[in-house]
Structure formats: structure tokens, C-alpha cells
Image 1 (cartoon, rainbow, N blue to C red):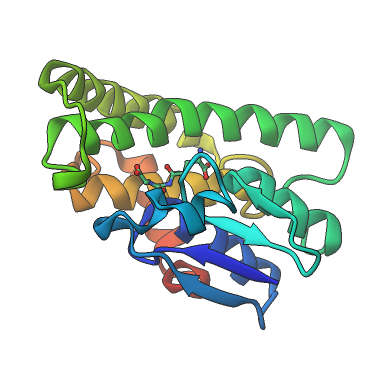
Image 2: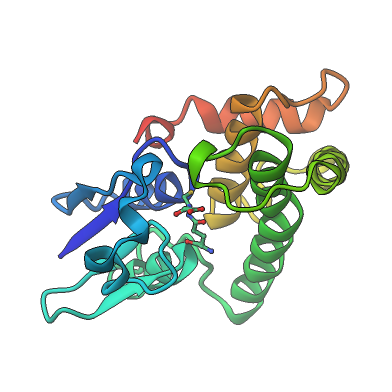
Length: 204
Ligand SMILES: N[C@@H](CCC(=O)N[C@@H](CS)C(=O)NCC(=O)O)C(=O)O
């Protein structure tokens, strides 16, 4: 089993943190040179026609892409510690927040990166500065919403970290990379972020 990734980028990091929180090791990683466009060439496209990392390749050659699908695979293989919920209620609540964090934080900071900054440079085929600016606002707005959500919570859902916290941590660090750190007045988000950042998994 092998995971194709580019370790400087946030989606592969989500999977690495997920594996670290589960205590799963021994997985082989192979770097795909995304800045040089290796992910858009035939050998990699044969594994993931959407040309994105991470991609998990199983022993039988089956390839799974999409970060959450890869996490789901490992969650099913090794349910403990549960990072995607145990009871039907927990699973649904985690999925709700996972989607919210992904759609409002992760996707907006990613779109800002591609449109509001040089992004992937020579690999960017279309950039729309206005759309980048809008997504910067959306990311800042999402951080405010998440700050309000965390006002009486340690983690996004329940008493332990879940995939939601991992997605949010990677989105916020991606924000820091493009100079959009958490505004100082967002005290709940800052407290949560500091707690997540010192977990050993954060450096996976
Ligand atoms: N929805 C996908 C997104 C994956 C994705 O966009 N990965 C980035 C790296 S963080 C990538 O491969 N980008 C290549 C590109 O934009 O050309 C997932 O959840 O895995």
C-alpha cells in the first residue's frame, strides 16, 4: 500500500495527521512533484484521473483519491481511536462539521491561494483576482463562524479530536502560509488552534 502525495501541501497533510492520530504507521509515501506538474502527466493520471494528491494505491492496484475517502478507508480498517464518530448521531454531526469546515474554510483558502496569490505559478491556467479576493473574505468570515462555534467547546465535535479538527488545522495553517493568520480577536479559535498545534500529530 502506498500514498502518493506532495508533503508540503495541505490535503496530503490531512491524511498524514489522520494516520498519526490513529497510530497507523508503516505506510509507504511517494512524492509526486506537483510544482513541476508531475501530477498532470500520464503515469499519475492513470492512478487519479483528476490529477490531485493525495492518492492511495492498494496492493491490488485499486486507487482511491479524495482526502476524506482515504481517511474513511483507514477508519473502517482500524476503527480505534474513532476520528469519524462512533454512534449514528456522532457520525452525522462529524460529517456535518467536516463538510462545513471543508466548504467554508478549506475550499476558500485554497481558492484564494490559486486566484489571489501566484498559486502554483506556471501551472495556473486561469486566475481571477476578484474571485481570489472574494474567497479571502469568505475565509475570514468562516474563521469568525468557527470561533463562535468553539466558544464553549474544546474540539469541534465531542471531547476528542476528529477529522473536523484535522481539516480545520490544515486550513488555518494554509492560511498562515498565504499570510492570513487567525485574527487576534478570535480568542476561541486561537485557543483551539494552539491546542491542536502542539499535538504530536501536527508535525506528521
Ligand atoms: N478534493 C481533493 C482535493 C485535492 C487537492 O486539490 N490537492 C492539491 C494539493 S493540496 C493538488 O493536488 N493540487 C494540484 C493542482 O491544483 O493542480 C481532496 O480532498 O483530496
